[in-house]
Image 1 (cartoon, rainbow, N blue to C red):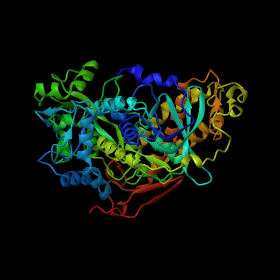
Image 2 (image 1 turned 45 degrees about the vertical axis):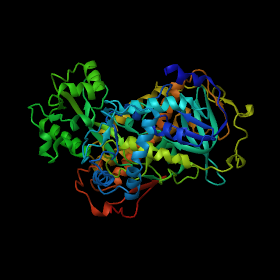
Image 3 (image 1 turned 120 degrees about the vertical axis):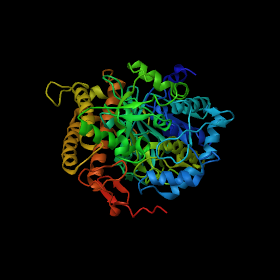
Image 4 (image 1 turned 90 degrees about the vertical axis):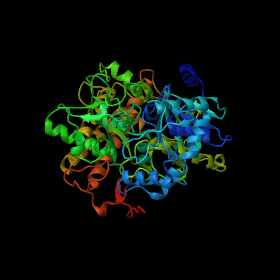
Length: 579
């Protein structure tokens, strides 16, 4: 399989309707598309020409209690403990008990997990009581996603639509059902109908200045579901990975937790293993604890990084287990066989998302959510390492049970047929000067303003809603984001795009490139994501899991509840029971 296999499909016109639209081509979206009944016509929508997702970047592996020394009960216990009192026990049991059959499914598909002889190899990661993490060297996510991509491309009922941006959900005003999507595709905005829409767009790490996430992780699914009125949950809980490569000009490349599981040390500039000063498990404490330990230690020392030393691990094991880490470090001038890797924490995984049940249903009929986009209840306030890929596969497998009825008879088009020529509007006929109107600041075009926001917003979020938070800083950031949202909505390009009516096919002028439209759409989503995280973080006046408040540094029993959001209302769920 090569890049042309995937990108060639962008040259095909695609139907105005599908039985199911799956948004996102990571592990969750791909596996869902493959599990859907064969008689469904499935549209698989991705933002890029090639498979690119956080799943593809996942290094550590996929957790499953399948070794004789392990048990589902132990996996459940570890998951519940990491989740800091907010895991939903039925969801965790569902995840863990279905893990073995899902692992076998991946093996049968051809995912080449590492082995010790005939047995699947297992490694230990932080907060796991047993070695239970399957891996394919240190590129497990890539191994899973590449295999699933190859299978999806071979399925005649799956149409891959790449370089398409899901802009908004299409809600039937008569019954509140989700009946499709508005896509920004090539040089037009189009409405595509479906009997069901599955959001599997990944996380939102790009809302922070420092993140291990790829550029596609802009919280699209959460943002469009929020605007459609879906119930969201626990958006304040963001996991900051303790060990991301920190070199000038280098991306925040994640150094897998498996490295510490195999015996690597965290040290400061004096060579001290400082993590034990903060937790008895040292480097193998839960991620939020290790991240705060590094953050606190750097504040005390005045330095800007610590070091991850792999030299306690035998060199042959490093070469076998971590070839990708070796390669990336070498690319940025770090020889991990002779020196430690400079690291700092970075935003990594969003525990919150669109609230779903065990069938992936959201509060909007016809709308489903999977993977990091969803809040299934399995991660609570802090995800256990390597449960994320498992969640993608276990819950995506549920899509095999999808029933959508005779949805094609329930047509409610507000503005005529989707591709009727009378509904095509050319932007140049409606905007006085195409897309380069100078709004704010002066001498700046709409797109330049959007690009400026795209740069400034993550810096604000890192400073105000990063590893440590407090009320006055959060409130100041909320006020700033509100101003930016208003300015963004007032842009003439925004005024036009936000008023496209369902059924209306809009053809843009040539001067609006696809990349500019995508940048606009992602910034629109990131502004909403930032607002949701900030408001949720201000709402929860305690510290728990991935949410740490300097002004409320301890967990509060009255907050052993989910934060629930719908539109502009925030409230607490009933107390979460953990037994």
